[in-house]
Image (cartoon, rainbow, N blue to C red):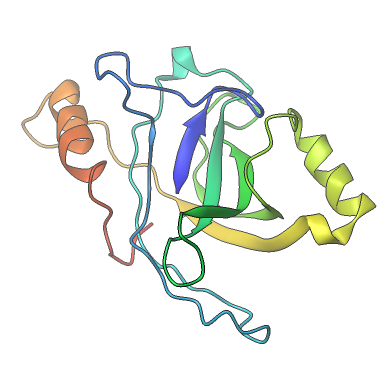
Length: 171
């Protein structure tokens, strides 16, 4: 699951016009064998969201990544297995784009972790806090499509793409 937060240790961002709709989405479930030697779990799916306008960007805004064990024979409820965070803007307050890597910490998201430095300290103090790395690519899509206004493109994204994850090659 990928969500957008106002800051590390903060609150999930919500659409101002859509009650209780978070700025986030999830992928389709991906199977993992659970074997210790299975070192890679390839998701290879697209997740779409709309980023805030440049004037609304704040330096602490982040994308959070959460990995869940879905309910089934191993667990009667969904359980958060790991989480990670990554800033959504660079030093120039531009939305990031490119390929990135972020560490995933074991367990559910900890609101006490309010600085990226704290993530590094946790891993440095005890490597068991670290579960894995997540590798992802952020591709900025155009704000305008041929013959459409910006808000029409945004409405297409929010009504169509945000509610159903893609399975294409582009992330």
